[in-house]
Image (cartoon, rainbow, N blue to C red; front, side, top):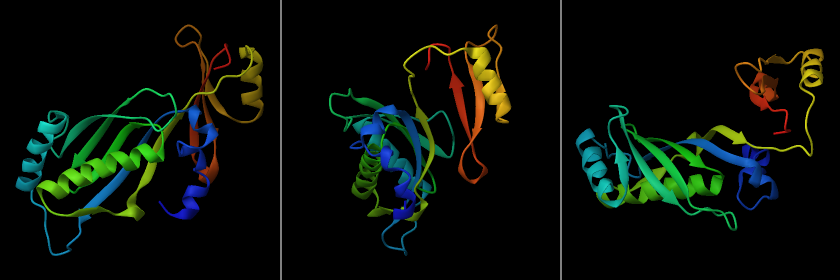
Length: 193
């Protein structure tokens, strides 16, 4: 992730005071052999998978083009409990890391996988320009309750796409425009959450 991209992501570092609002995030990354002449085969990855299975829990059944590594990782947040982090390792050495709440944790998870692959197969490194944050979930609480009818009016007046049917779901589901034409999915509840 380049420095320009990090500027808008300062709150995604565990040391930032607003990082406490991040409940979970998904990061996508990629590794490659340090030596460009080295090709990592499926058989080598299977051997690596079997070795990693001795270190931690892995799942093989979900997809045929990857295996999932389950890690229990310490949170860099003071006083926070350990986190269950899932890392899909694809045959092309792509990684999908889910369950972290900071860039620091995602980096630590990538480093664990990278070190295991270096031990078993060949030296590998991250391709920094391919790392991206695919999804971030936040939790905010307002100081009081919301009037759901008024909230619907405000969303409607501002052209925000939303759906509210209290018979099927307790909150308003809204798609709020953010930068570059992207939409943020937001769930708004009467209790201000």
